[in-house]
Length: 186
Image 1 (tube, rainbow, N blue to C red):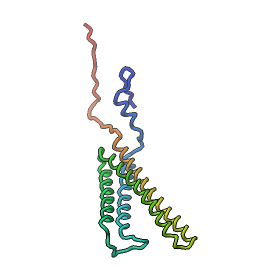
Image 2: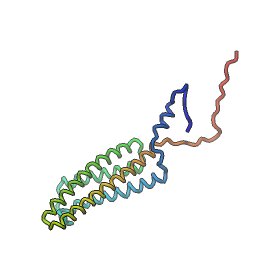
Image 3: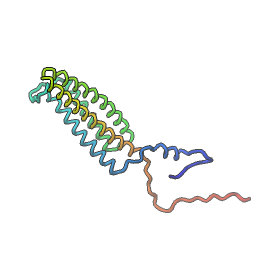
Image 4: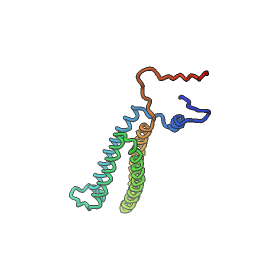
């Protein structure tokens, strides 16, 4: 790394070079991260849309939806699609917005996972004691897997964000510009 100092004081270029903490992002990792983000977004959109049809432990096809349910799922799916488009296009200014959106969705998913765990725990009171604990453990494992996959997607988006923040070195055509300063000898 070139050290840019002027009279012993760091210049702006050296400070910017020190700000790059994550240099491990490579084009291959970024491409892999984009593919994972796309695949996990499709998975989560399918989960949200499928949750409209899954009521009280049964898959219901002839269910009348309330406007609130449809709006919540539509907003979440729209946010998921917006997040994916921002990441795939590597929008430098909007990818931070995508990280904030995903952070909010991580928080909401964690709350939803805890709520689902409580629903399974309360619903298992009517089941025999030995089966109830297995239902609760199964529900907790499913909730932990969903939250873990969200964190994997968060890391993938963070990888793309770091890649957009890494300064690129562009090759110039021709020899380097060398300027010679001569002192005035008169």
